[in-house]
Length: 104
Image (cartoon, rainbow, N blue to C red; front, side):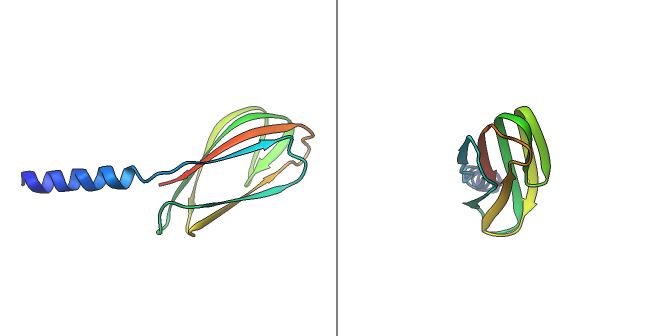
């Protein structure tokens, strides 16, 4: 029983430590942009996008409308090895963002 518990704990710690973070810096965004990154898992999983920065007016990250001082986390499901999401500047003329993406 003790060996089984150690095995399960080891597997969980190995699977949870495979989360790599991909960082995108969008400085003075001029055009709409599609961002791509490689997911760390091969099966359907969750995607977490941490967004920090500033936009002087409305922007869209995927289908989420953001503006002003931005410090938020978006979560969604994804089903492909390559993850794609859109950043549209919409009404914004000055936009600086840092997006940190990870799948788990």
